[in-house]
Image (cartoon, rainbow, N blue to C red; front, side, top):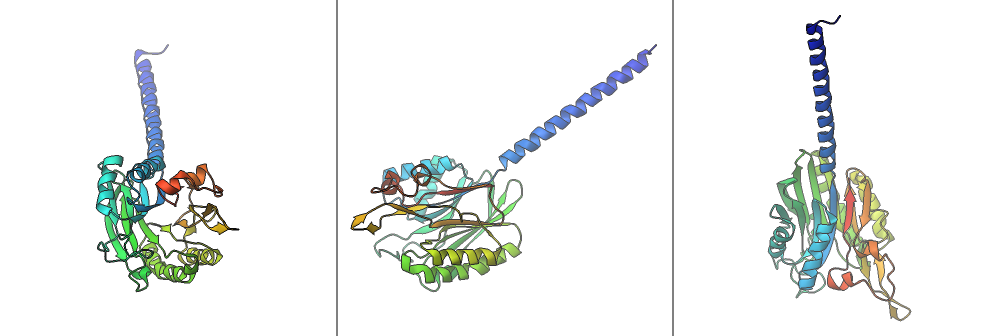
Length: 302
């Protein structure tokens, strides 16, 4: 026969086992939830001379940013930094922050049009997930020429305590600019090497204006020197242009935008019309080209 005391101890042991099992299940669910929450999505987007194209550009640019679902976005060609920051808080949420280069407005002349407002670059990030530790504007990539653009570096700390250094660039444009772009990469490399030596993850992204094979050779050399993964290497196109072929203008894609990272992403994509229309639209470029930007956003996920 089983005594009342034995039965009581058995019931107590069973309850304890069930409690431990329930706690383990909750712990596993919490860990899975945290892993999902910490999935990292990072983008780069050259929003052509924002907001110079008008209200439609502003509307579609922020709709595009929202659709990316990225917690960090490298920005290029912003002509109204204060207006962009205010619009980001309105459209994306009050905790979103943006850090732009510290070049005073009007100090750096447009490379293409002296009448064009200064084209700023920066880092947009979700303040619920990231805290800015520090930021720097590096003149090294200007090569002593005020018409070239500096590099922005932002040091962020994530809610999971990971540290990330984000570098944003916008190199010289034009098919004949490859030698200068190679020098800009050479000037950028020591900055990245220093950041890597200090610890944490590093990402370098933006509009590299890589128009040909010479550029790609320089990008490969940069990746090898810094030890970064050239995450965007396989992207077929990230922007559109309209060259004249046999007396007719056609819309063609080109891979101008890139992302380098400490570790390879799970996925790397060109979004917007580069995804939905492709790299050879034909006689006409997508409406996005006219209304928003000649560049598509690129998106990596880790």
